[in-house]
Image (cartoon, rainbow, N blue to C red):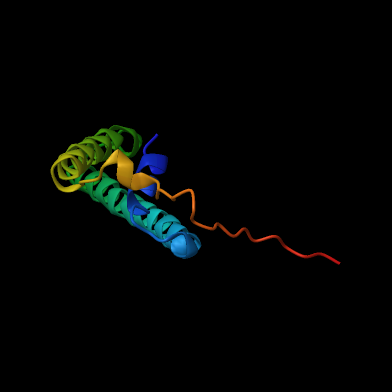
Length: 114
């Protein structure tokens, strides 16, 4: 639900000839960010499990119950990211699509096969 609007916002102001490279950069950033986020919350979960086991808790209970700590941390991160997005991201709907005048020539790439 968020990826398409964020992609549109990230490509605001990009010239049409640079749109492919910019789109690839944004997609790579999404994947790297997701990997880093997963790693951070996995470390948070593992440390919570380790803390519970060190305190003498049951292993099965620690493995299942500490997901709530990871989900709470991810929820707090989402609220923080939402506040950042609300206050820092500025984009207008008119900026998302470049306007072209009727006299502007648009060239299309047609692959030649054969």
